[in-house]
Each structure stands twice: as structure tokens, then as C-alpha cells.
Length: 326
Image (tube, rainbow, N blue to C red; front, side, top):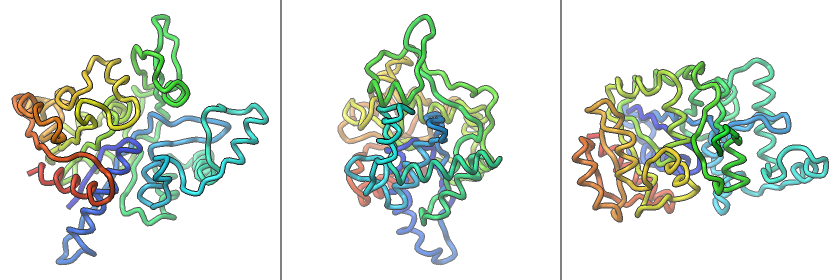
């Protein structure tokens, strides 16, 4: 079975860990000649250059989580991290003092920046970086192009890099719109369109619909590939009981006029049968009342627990998502 997952960072990482656990249980060591191949197409709109380093937060969050090297308590970064280099940079008044990078994390950014400056594209750099870990998932940045998300915060067009709006201001500054700079000329990274076309099932992780999944869909050719794909597309709601699970995705949804509800996000993606994306949509048991609205739009709706508290609950969610593909 070939599974392709569209993913952002932390929530997507936990979901992918569940998908991997499910696949290893259902297809142990290729028993009977059957295997499961998992490919994650990952948002790169949060990426940036900082202090001379190319930082890819979503790719790294997924890699660290699947490698078992992430800090589970904080929810991001490396476990056992130190921050001496960031302290030195602050002393030199270099970089963003509110954006702290751990020393081990900086090692990853140095490796990536070295590869990029050597003329190696991000997709190949990602393959080389992830090769040191046994992660069991192929990570593909959605594009090799630099497509960075900026947040327009007033009518004059003043904007902030998404990381400043998200990390420094915690989305407290109202966003008028999100702009993915360079998206019009970007192309899907090698292997991305093939991963969509060849998949047996396509899953949309419970990631931010606007700046994570939205950025992926904004790369020319991606949305068309999804609507043309033979595989069913199953999404997992990032909204539980009418609220975001983590982060400030509600502020992002508000900026594009979408309510913070499981049914509103499903309708935002749309039914594949009518030119949208979704074959099926998973909502939490607390949002069971939204199922009728979603089903009426032509999207098969599955009501099931969505909280990913640990690997077993994440694995069960992955099983439910694959089963929803029919």
C-alpha cells in the first residue's frame, strides 16, 4: 500500500507517527509480499533564512518526532537541548532574540544550509539529512523553491514574516491575509506529483488548513493533481469540540472567513465529487453534530476520537483514516 500524507509540523508529525505505527503493525516486514510505503508532502511556507541558516520548522519537527529525538514536553525541538549558541547570538545582537534555536537543532540547520549553498536542492538536502535517522517515512518538501509566508497586518500592506506573527506575537495582531511570496513561480519538488498520482490513499493530516495545508495546495499543480488522483482523499479535522487543538489556527481561519468548526474546515476543502478535495472527513465524537452538514456536501463523514495522546491513539486514528478511504 502506498500512503501519501499532506502535512504541517507538530500535529502532522504526531499523525505521521501514528500512520507509521499502523503500517508496521499491518504490514510487518513485508510479510506475504505486502508492504506499506509512506510519503509525507510537507509544508515549507514557514521556512526562512535566519543568521545565515536555512530553517525548515515543519520538516524538522516531523523528522525529530519520527526519529524519537523530539522534546515531547515542549512539543517541538530536540530532547536534551541546550541553547548556548542562541545566547551568544543575543549577546551579539544578531538574529531574532525571541526565536530561540537549540544547539543540536542548529546542527541540522548548518547541514541544510551547507547543502543548499553547494547547489543541492532542498528535496535532496532533506533526503541526506533524514538518512541518519530510521524514520520509516519519505519526507518531501512540497517545493524546492523558497516560498515564505508573510502576514499582511494593515490596509497599507504592512506585513510580517509568518514566524514573527506566530512566534513573537502569538497571532495577537489581526491578520488581514496571508501571502506566500514566490508561490506563483514555484514548482512541486521532484517526486511530489508522483506521490499523489501513485498513491492508494491520500491523507490530509490535522494541520493548519490555512498556512500549512493551504501553502501546499497553493503550489501550482498540487491541487489539480489531488483532484485528478485516483486515490481517495481522507482528511482529519484539526478542530475538536469547536476549538483548535494547538497553536492559533483559529486566527488563521478567521482571516480567510472560515469558522473554527469541523464542518466549516471540511467545506473549505470541499468534496472531491464536486471539484474539491475530500472523499471522507474524520471528526471527533464531540463534533458529531456536524456530520450531517458535511455528509450533505458529498463528503463521507466518520465520527471517531481524534485526540492523539500517545502512539496507540495516533495509530488508531491512522487506522480509522485509512478505513474511511473505503
